[in-house]
Image (cartoon, rainbow, N blue to C red; front, side, top):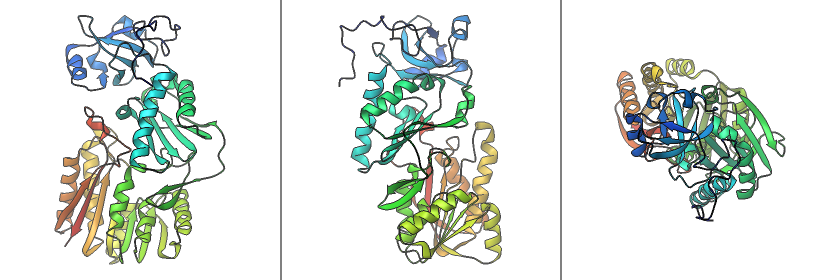
Length: 417
């Protein structure tokens, strides 16, 4: 299906609902000069201080589609608009002729599916990665015949019905779970809720990754129930695990732990403060026949690392993959201190000649800042090291070329002396 509108289509005949209206019949929102410069460089966002928040803009319902224009009235893009959050406009298309309707969503989803099928080969991946896939504020993770859908913007919330129709046409899932409980929704003045929009769930779902079997809780697990972004990093870490004692901190549902055991680790300790997550990890260990070499420990990572270091525990491979320490720019300084401390504590339990894998999913901490804190943490621990690999997310989490925030995941693999 072509991604261009037919010249014969009437671009002004859509119903009055702003979420469904065709480009050309939308409210106009005017950008200030610095906002125009950002969009012309390809950035998909306009911040509230880059927009003329006049009476016309304030009258636009949250999440409605608008045309962005410069001071001279020149078209700059069609966007979801919400005056409440700092990110007030999110560009959906830079082509005025595009209709933002079900067919538009189908085209975007078909392209996203084509890329994932080429990259991954099994139906377990992130299908839609928000702006990077041209669908602002939308996350879709695929678990075979089930989809976990997270709608994080008021604009995409308005299109949820059309989105479900489009997903059924493109993917045809039995089950669709709306994981609309992210903190990002509060910024858009949206309620937090989890619901099964289609089909039914009966406990955790099995998934395949790197040839292993895991389990995800789509209703109650963190985020959408699984972190596909670490797929490639898990495989790389497993390559360091043969014959080693392994400590997997923030183990969640066992992605790093079970793969390390399958790669020949002689013992794996999975540490997490969530018992339900550890229960899923134990299920995965049993399903893959490595339960006898895996131990699952509930605890707080910083405290447990301090305790184990004092007790003289040492591991050939230590993995620290924490939740985001930097949730906003104001948290940056404190969050960076957290990464430094975590690197110091983790290094203190790495055996001489062992390996450390350190990760960050905080997009506010760029790769250089994160690497700097890891380096300082190693120095604090009195350990010398060499960097073997610096990586990001798996390729089903593409990066928008003009949006560095979409390259949120960093991981460093280090050999310690």
